[in-house]
Length: 385
Image (tube, rainbow, N blue to C red; front, side, top):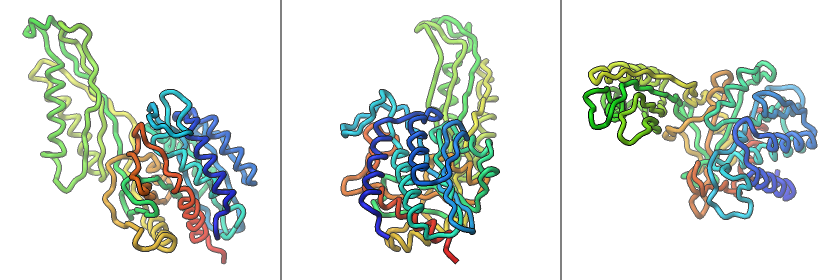
């Protein structure tokens, strides 16, 4: 069924309104109000309160399986450099990852499915807060998402620069890497910079340690294993002529296999405990809560592939693609419920700016493709008997 011009006009309006008023994780009050209001106008049951700002719209159409479709809502702490008319009106915050587009697509899909009802079963439209580093998906699961809304499967999409518009990529396994964040504290002995022998210099140890950690992927793991260790922050020191007492390093670890993830964490702990000792410095590692590998379940992944083949055509479907070493907290939902996560190509005639770039803007030509895909997925996953 062809999407109505009125629906596409509304989807475009929602997308650009959300882009103009971006909100950070757990602060999506305007965003969730807009979504809840539109879902209620569509006639869906609306539930709020999980993870603070989450919104869930439920559409029941007869008996049958129950599935969930998820969109993320939050923006990033980035100052937008684009010059589009709908650019961010909030200083230092912008939708640099396309969550405005994801939300608009899912909202429009809810309206379309409520109007057509060519399925038998129940669909939960899940609008999730705080995907960017804050673990909104995990919080929703911990607060009872799948106990309050039991589902047979849950699905999520993400726009993907680097793939052409109208294409889709999905794997029967890993799509995105795990994420672990660490904070390493090095304790030394402060002294005058002109007399380093009277102290214990944690700055030198920090330099040695940063380089040593890079040997984990290159020398301590098989070349067939996938891991990235990145130190992204160094904090320490006050006066230019004083060796500091303490240095703090922060960074992330990304892996595609759970066993590799465990090994990398163990090796970092060993380096931090042992490398500083000859320098008279001690070290400790604090691990921050991370995300598991975003690994699709075989059945839901095959379902996405089948719909994509029928909707987009074989030449536009990418199966068994290289996973991304970026991370996605939808993995936490798929730990609790079978599901699949997939990418929709975002590159038109002009390639998209990268995700998390200050000049990124969601490609609005993706709106009808995403809406139609969600409709087709629901109708094929919940067929009328």
